[in-house]
Picture 1: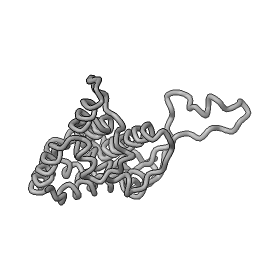
Picture 2 (picture 1 turned 60 degrees about the horizontal axis):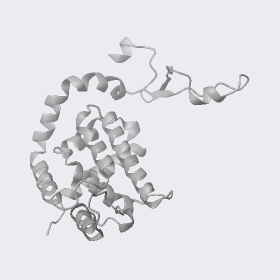
Picture 3 (picture 1 turned 60 degrees about the vertical axis):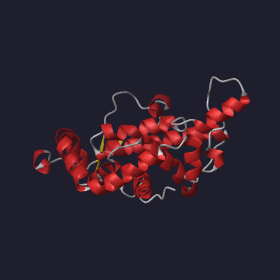
Length: 234
């Protein structure tokens, strides 16, 4: 139907150039005689064209069906989230195996005495990676898989920025280091129907995103969901 209405569209997975509303940065710095700067392009697919129009209207009943379909798994996940979130920050970081170099060196408090500061630090909750937690919580306010994947990407960027500020150096993540930190953020985000979010993204995400950076980040979120379900709490 879309092909009939818009016959000039390229084939599935093709690209079309976008017309920027303002000059691109590279266009501002190029000289008059330089070659044309590359124009941004958009990958064309049925999902990228139709889902932004359809999902905002269909989302509430569709998401309800996803939640009902995985209700038993969601209850198991949520029970573990509630129990683990009773832990203060440092205890939860230690329980999840987050390396100490990623722990906050201090949390701002108003008490002047060192002993009192240490006591407050050991009992503080929801202070570590707070910006990443707030970002991930926005996944529940989006409708399309592409927008949800952008939220996940921004969460990873927030985590990296906070860790860089702690270590004061550039570094490369390894999955062994990153996964426990991201698991902590997922737990603190307290997303009630995370399994439904995961299944909706998996079913409707654009195939061109499955094997790229967004695909790896989504797989990490999915692994966190299953890890929380099977986490043994003593």
